[in-house]
Image (tube, rainbow, N blue to C red):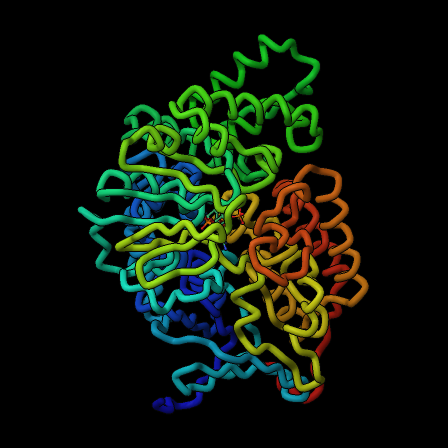
Length: 545
Ligand code: NA7
């Protein structure tokens, strides 16, 4: 490893995805010296890594984009209703060029440790490549679905074919023509990938542990009229989105409870939303779909019936119809021909709940019963060590003896999802305790980064240089996040929201599900009240200009 000169920054940013890039733009605009460190060989984070076939955003492209610059959102042309991975990556690269962000991004650099020296009031970051960086503040923009996870299957390294994970997909792509392909995992990634691979592969075998609800995306080329209307009122639409729980506009808020409505009318409503496509619209059918099991059953059963009507083989249909969680309590999938794909003669579904995967053999996959599936290629759509994975991979500690991995041993603790008690001057973007993953992510990213930028400005204006949450504020926020989750149906699902996909991970509800609108008002009111719950101080030995 080569040793570059020691670098001194105002703010070190970990990650060069949508969050890291906006943080550069925003903080640099305040005259701060910033630099982002990105492990990938290109910018884009999630959209750089997840190049699997069919990768696409499940939020409409006119919504899933930055709002900070009016001219940018007017100029950019989204070709489809939902952005594909290549389209979104192209957009991110455009933004980086347009705002000259690249000069402050260092690629191929992985942050290995971050240590806060409480005497010097300074963070020291070290990279895998051997560089040392000193910074007053750190912004962790390392992503929340950015630590891909391949289950620890016995024999995987003896597999003679090639294997891939959706989140580490080869840049050059993969050609499955003529191959016998296996896909393990049926979350959003699997559901998007399966219909495309089915068209290429000779034979596709899907190994399903838990069936997931998927709704049709109804993707289309961008209708010109829709784009024109949206752009004519972009700013108002963005502002309106801020007033909604998912930070997504364009859907009238529901007004009625599910069971107040006659069954036939409900069926018509669900049908209309199924035809319209998209997940928000469906979940917005009634006010109580995510809080009342009885209400949710009606929406879940509607989709199960759709699956039964689409999939011709009744046994496969029943396996695909989710029964262990209420609809919407796991991330809803959006698809194009997912269920239809199981009607193809070259596609088969294997239930690995009743007969789990025992091992990977040189030839393929062997189940507990002994059944063996011979494969030429194996795709893991098995997800991520979500929410905490990226930060737990970095050795984060302070000279006062705080160690983040220990602090988070029983589950992540944050105040507002933004800061951690005992770790001064370290901000997190869309981490645990943030509404991020339950919202249009870029809206949360912009809101968090703006909040962080304002906090840093406030400190400077008051000749202060240290901010950290009190232990009490952190404890209260975590209790609030849990109380809000417990008032909903979300905890009923074994999802990555509770870390259920990672064996041994403490079962703690991580995202804030009280709604983006509520979170935004609350976090901004705290700032207005002089950063309630935070301790702000001026550090004695540090010179403040
Ligand atoms: P997800 O949603 O975490 O899905 C992972 C899938 O892999 C899920 O079906 C899992 O089944 C399955 N899985 C994981 N481990 C195993 C083992 N050991 N055996 C069989 N099946 C397994 O990840 P995605 O990448 O699809 O999506 C992540 C997010 O990215 C998504 O929510 C969007 O926000 C974008 P399980 O349900 O755990 O039984």
